[in-house]
Image (cartoon, rainbow, N blue to C red; front, top):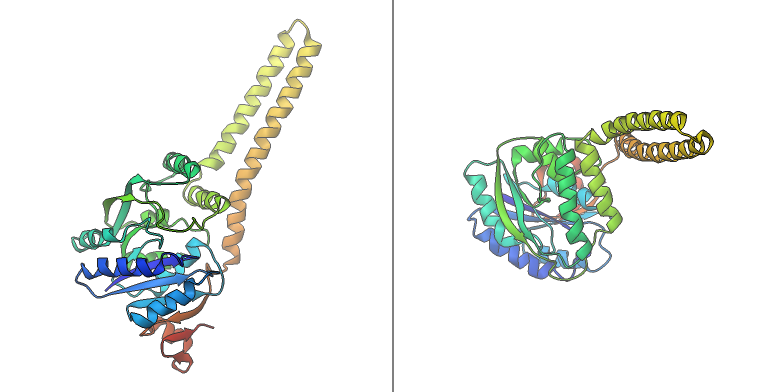
Length: 326
């Protein structure tokens, strides 16, 4: 079976046409399939549209979360529910083109356990993001302690063994492309052209994108912490140089005053910069210690309830087509 996991947040403009496009792509694989839509606390009619899709197509599984948990929370919930031997992750806004799915499945059938969809080009109507995305990948490539495929998001395919490995990881602040590379296994790459959104506005705020970028860096690199150590050494060196210049100066009073002021300003900037980096790492340690779930599932709408949910809920709690998760 091929499972396609799609996080959904306020995508009422795209859902009916998207389901048709993914269905057509999956039929080309000649395999059994399911589409797991994860409703991440949508405030529009997305859930009602997904329920209608489920009522008309038994291949559609709807996972309704208790509230909006963010992109990674929705993706993680979908990975837990998906039953396929291979799982395709993609967004539901047509930026990840459904017609690429057969190519991902074909690479998996030839032996790849992880198939990464790498963007050959990117259409982006938001000009600021068009500039920032390439910059982010350059920074991530320079800072990462091990190779992470660049110009790649969640779009791609993972086999069951890879998904089980990722599901077993307990970390809260997740950067899935990094985790996908970290668990290893045999990789393959499929190149594609990323489109702009088919309809509607992007749902991730600029602040959310910054946090996601910080998750990527702090989860897979200690280099920012080492940068703090380097800056402290440079600060000491700068203070020594300023002291020597003050001693050698013809007008030591003015030079010393300028040197001391400059040294205090420089050290203050370095200290606050380093405290900011340490705070990011410490905040993530705090998240991990609390061990809160990435998301909470409210209901699952499925023609056949997944076995693992039956065990969790008990047969007596199962309503055909709807599973109420405690």
